[in-house]
Image (cartoon, rainbow, N blue to C red):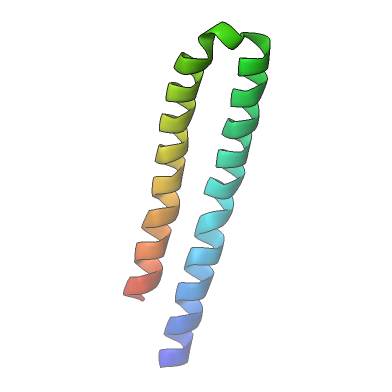
Length: 70
């Protein structure tokens, strides 16, 4: 039964990291695109983009916590 708990933890962090990883990549790509279009607004774009990345990363951290609990 203990081995299944380890497998459940591995699956939880594996699947829990896919969504945030894709989301952070999309946010970063759109940030670079927006800065390329309007370099004068780069500080506002970076602030909003980094905040959005932090929220996406929090979801991966929740998955990590669940994986450690199992």
